[in-house]
Amino acid sequence: MSGSLLSVRNLSVDFTQGGSTTHAVRNVSFDIGAKETVALVGESGSGKSVTALSVLQLLTYPPASHPSGEILFRDRELLRAGEKTMREVRGNQISMIFQEPMSSLNPLHTVERQVGEVLDVHRGMSGAAARKRVLELLDQVGIRDPQSRLGSYPHQLSGGQRQRVMIAMALANEPDLLIADEPTTALDVTVQAQILDLLARLKEEQHMAMLFITHDLGIVRKVADRVCVMTEGEIVERGPTEQIFTQPEHAYTQHLLAAEPKGSAPATDTSGQVIVEADNLKVWFPIRRGFLRRTVGHIKAVDGIDIKVREGETLGVVGESGSGKTTLGLAILRLISSEGRIAFLGRDIQGSAFRDMRALRSDMQIVFQDPYGSLSPRMVIRDVVGEGLAVHEPGLSADERDQRVIKALAEVGIDPATRFRYPHEFSGGQRQRIAIARAMVLEPKFVMLDEPTSALDMSVQAQVVDLLRALQRRHGLTYLFISHDLKVVRALANEIIVMREGKVVEAGPAEEIFDRPQTDYTKALMAAAFDLEVAFGGALNA
Image (cartoon, rainbow, N blue to C red):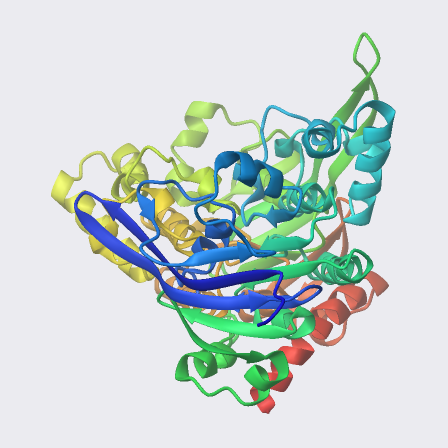
């Protein structure tokens, strides 16, 4: 394309380790014009993120190398540019929103310091001026009461809030090109719509171009001018967005358009055993101010919630980021302090000591929202998945444990032959599947699933939903399923509670909540989800 802002030509990326070479990207070419949005679409491991990271030289060299290709930004070659040139470009002319905010944000620095650092490095802005700009950015990306979040650390924010901080950092210097790597993955549907509208508005106001990387085709049709479809390191189809959606030519593109979670939750016995029960559960975090750090108020993350989940049942917990969904789950598992009654298998566990809880942990498992942060980077995945077996079933031989790991990995769609690799050698979606295998290997009775499909592409989402249902039927598993993806919730949940600001605003059977929502808030969630699904449904019906 003549006059392109960014031109990627014949880009190849290899990873060489231990005498073996993986061809991650092969002869990829595309252009992005000024003020244009190009979407790079494909399943996990297709090479999308590796391509984007190459633009800013953010891969580790070695083991990464570029056997071919060039990357031109305003006719300036970046692929082999020096560090001085790249410092001028990164975060200033080209910014990037990373897929996993928890591993990208510094856990030791506050929100104000991290966003302010971008302004200081590239604009020399500090003090009151920087604080004012930070507040503006946080407000733009939908952080409620941004003044109160300036002193927060990443672990004090929800997954969606952390992603919004990352977006604020990327937009701080009004870049010419924004690389957005799954920027809405961790966000609920209403905030997802807000962020997409925000990016579209900023793109117009700042004459900004975007390289938008995603596995969510509903989003692609909403934001992109042109689409490049990738699989196995190659672009197999490209063209204007409407053409790709209405007249897909390649079989892989057709496969992506047809993939979405289907089916419904297994029927449950309403007289079955109650696995988990909570009464008037509260988690209040104190707000301390002043020299003496006196408590002046509380953040009521969970405020008087009752739940009851029976054997073989799935309770879906939905609500916007920061509504208290994850805090509720962590409290039920006794991983954070709370008030109120919690019973597991009829036993009151609220006052149980750590040593007593440890005996129950094999029956109470969790899949965390951020797989990269929850998997040890120093352990191969065989040991990551098998660690629970070593603790809770020490009588197993090494070979028996390995066979259990192989079975668990195969069930979640990970090649068991890769079990000697480290987490960083897998894509985001593959890491999430490894995290699910780690929870399932112990064959627990109760599993808390905290956004388990948020990092997965659509076809793998469908596979994981089918897997979770199959495991539930086979073993009578009970799930607490936390998600902002209402399509996935509808495919899995028997009962649903809708949370807002720590309280339950609506609860009932899944069918009633989806088909006949009663509260304005629930109706708004459904409307936002429907708006994002209209394009997707239209593509399927075309």
